Image (cartoon, rainbow, N blue to C red; front, side, top):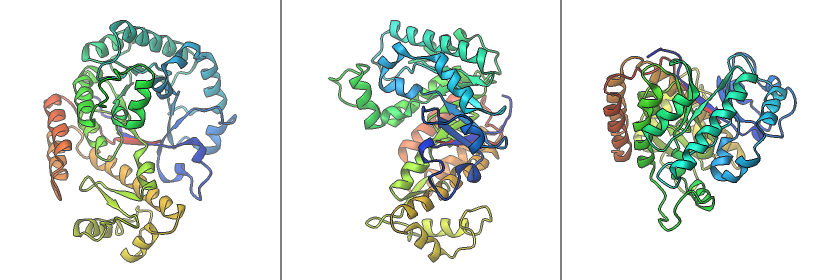
Length: 378
C-alpha cells in the first residue's frame, strides 16, 4: 500500500469558528467543515492558509437523515457555493452523496438508485472542482465493489467511505426510522460493534491494497486507531467537541475518558493523574508549564471556559495519537499489539477488543498502516 500521512481531521461547526478566543486552524493542521449557506465569499481564505489541510463536506449526512431532500438537490448550486467559499490545492472536497444506511432497511433497487445518483453528482463536481473525492456506499461488500466500479477510478485514487458508526446514536437512528429507512417494529438500533464489523468487512473492498481511504466518522478516540489498522489514510471526528461539552477529556494512552464534571470525577485515580502529569511535560501540550493543580483548576473553570480548555486538550490528544499511530507504518501486527495493551491496561474494554480482533483478522497482514495518519476535526 502506498504510504502517506494519516490525518484525523478536526470536524468543526462553521458557526463556532471565530466565536472563540482561539482559531481552530492555529491548533490543528487538519479541519473538516460542512459547506453551509452561512459561509461568505472567500470564507476559506479568511480562516485557513495553504499549510492547513481542509476537507469540506457537501452535506450528504442531511440526506441520510431525510432522503426526500435528494429529489430537489441542486448539485450545480453546490459547486458554485464551493467556488465562492474557496478551497486550497491540498484540500479535499467531499462529493455530494446519497448515503446508504446499513443493518437492513433498503431494497436492492433503492440501493442501486442511490449509488447511481452519487456517481452522477461526483462526475459533475469532479469536472468543475479537481480536488473532489467520491464517496462509496453499500450495505454489503458486493454493493461496495459495484459502487467503486461505477466510478471507474484509478486504483490509487482516494475515496471516502462512510463508517456509518453514527447509526448507533439514538438521534440518528430515530431520524432514519422517520425517513422510512428502518423497520419501525424492530425498534432496536444497531450497536457500534455491529456497525464496525460491517465496515471492517467492506474496507478490504474499498482499500484494495493500494487505494487511500478517508473513513468518514471514524475519528473518535478509540475508532481512529482501528481505522488506521484497517489502512485508512484519513478520518474525522466530532467527539473532541461533544465530549468537551460534557467535561470529558481524552486519555489516548489507555483509551479512556477522564471526567472533569462537578458531580463525577476520576482525575485523581493513579492512571489519570500520571497521564496528565506526563502531558504537562510535553512542550507541545497547550497547557505545558502549568502545575497539575493549576491544570485541574483550568478544567474546572465555570461555564464555557472549562469547555474550551477541554476542547484544546482533546484536539491535542487526537493529533498526538495520529502521530503515534503513524509510527507503526507498515507494521499492522505491532499496532494491533499496542492497541490490545491500550484497551486492557487499566480496565478490559471488551467491545473494543472484539473490534480490534476482527479488524486484525481482516487485514491479515496485507494492510499497511499509513505513515502520518490524520484525524480531521469537525
